[in-house]
Structures are given as structure tokens and as C-alpha cells.
Length: 287
Image (cartoon, rainbow, N blue to C red; front, side, top):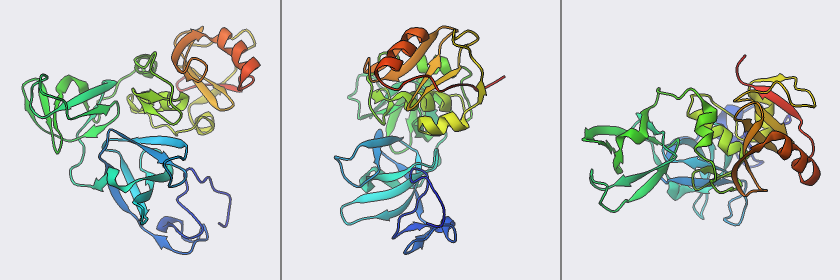
């Protein structure tokens, strides 16, 4: 490379890089890549093409990714269109783009049925944020192209967003903690923030250091923690939480191994003593 780049968001390796990086990085060859969509409920994106490699993040059903290479073992090296994250995922979890999504899942999780009947065996589940193409309505169900039938009230038109991302995050209370996760089956601290903001139409980077640099603006809060309000973001090194009110923190965390709600002061004392150290900053998304 000819400069300093973040491997998490830069599709460049010594042997291969994205065409748009030509002249900016050094690589054996450059390719334009091809846009594809995820066809699984959620698929792990990893830093290396191995299933024993730690999950960096997840791509959700319908999410677009640019694929730059598929190796002999079936691993696709790709970049997410939503947050620019780069990594490896099974090529079988992707398909060529065909229908543009019209809706997204707004419920924490919803089931897909072969018929517009909740008594029929579900064929799969979709997480909040999944993107689907609705072909028609059948009573209380939406016919989703290529999948089946989804309870229509669990969907929202792509441009129809919620207004309170903290309220979205509260739906994930007690969901298990999963490093790299961003679904109701398991999620981490930054995954909780990212998926909740997305439901409100706010694009967010994936990791806490990126969020600390790119979400909202710094606010000054004293040692007594007075002045915080609902929706403020609290940062530690490697951790983030959302204020539910002036005193209460909501965060997916490895201490409770779930998304938990607790007094910020209690969380601050425990985290200072056991893990991430002191709070590094507070940020607010709106004035």
C-alpha cells in the first residue's frame, strides 16, 4: 500500500485490490468486483477465510456486498455496501442481484411461511434490518419474492423509519451477547447501536472506535455524570452503550453476556475495575 489504510474498510491485499483503489494502493491486480445480495438470515464476515476465525460482523438477508474474489474453497472476499466492512464469507450465502428490496424487517425477528398461514411450518427467519422485495399482499401477509410469506406488520417500507433509536435498542433487552453479532439471536455492543440506528435511517460504522470518531458530536459531561439524556452514547475503549434516560445505560456486554439495562454509575465503576477502563467520551447525535 502507498498509505495507511484500515483493513476493515479497505478492500486491498498484496495480491488483489478493488479497482477504485488503483493508484492509491499497491496490489498484484485490481478488479471491479460484482454486486451480490445475502440470501441467508445472517452470515458471518471474517477477517480470514476460516470457520474457526473470529466473527468481525454479520451481513443480513438482502444486504448488498461487492465480491472481489471467490477462492477454490468457496470463500468470497467482499465488502459490505452498508458499512464498507471487508472480509470473507461463504459464497453460497450470496446470489446475483435480481429484485431491488422494497421493504425491511422492523420486528426483532420474523418468520417466513410457505403459505399466508401462521400454522404452516416456517421455512426460515429474518432479522431486523433484513431487506426484502414485496411482490403482493395476501390478507395480513406480504408475499416476499423468492421466499414466501411474512407477517406484513413486521415490515416497513424502505423509506419509512422510526424516530427513537433507543426504543429500538430496548427491544433487544436480554438478547444474548455474541461477539460480531447484530441480530436477535445474539449481538455485541456496537452491533446493537448500528442496527438500532439503521432502523431510524441513520447510517453507522460498525466498530466502537469508528463510532467514536463518526457518530454525533462530543459532549462535555462531568464526573458526577449529570447532563446526560436519552440517546446519548457512552464510550469506553472497545465498548459503547446507549443512555435510556439521564441515569440508565443500555448495552450489550460480556459481563452480563446479554443486552442489559443498569445505572451508568454502577457500570462505570465495574468496567473501570475489571475491563475497559475509564469512560473515554460521550457523544450526542442531535443538538
